[in-house]
Image (cartoon, rainbow, N blue to C red):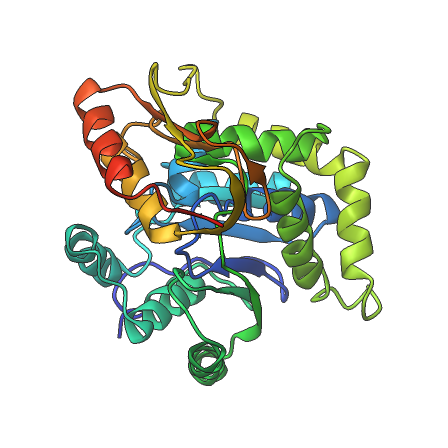
Length: 346
């Protein structure tokens, strides 16, 4: 029913690929790495994304730091015909508008049930014209899916509904035990993505590897690649600079942002209360702190993680830096972090 209400996009190809993560992991901006890799390979990948529902940033929010994402259907068709891909906000092209109404209710209530999640994701993917879809389900103690049992139940739900819709799916489980990358919030996440695409030596390794893993799975849909070749092809396209070139062409085609966004000028560093090893990071807590700072509405607000799980820290050393453009937002975020930083140190 959600598909039948609203627009449906059509592409002149029997193979239209996409990738979607169910969310809940701060900083997990793999779509902005996967899409240019896939486009550089030559597969059609019209990626439409919603705004953040319960997170400090969605793909559309982060891509909007670099380029226009509010694209008409005609512009999307034109860009995909030329560049093989697009990274756009799905709301503009009226894909599954019933879902957008539900999202507007869910956002303030921070709701996101499994059934609504599957309906939301698959209705929009079918409406966007996708034929093949990789679904990323992160599993972790503070992720949306917290056990292997729940992950298997969700995978079966995706596969059952997708099968009835004629959508080929590859559902994979990933590590959702901590945030991905360093930046949380639109500007900081866009920085991380571009560092990965540029091949900068200090780019977040976890974000790069997660992006390559997912891109490899998407490329496996190409019948020209033999089984298992997707991952090596993804690495080749990233290392050669082909993915960066594809991203730069996408940014130009969609309309490069003239406004230059910076991380929020008001900062506060959250210190380690004692020395030890970081053994846990609470994804929900970190996301709440980043949202109180102003993300995603304030593009420059968010958190810069200075340590991840496994890091050895000394007492009084900064664990992360909160950025905000509003002193009020910074104050709220600082107070929440003071109650509980979201870090477990042992």
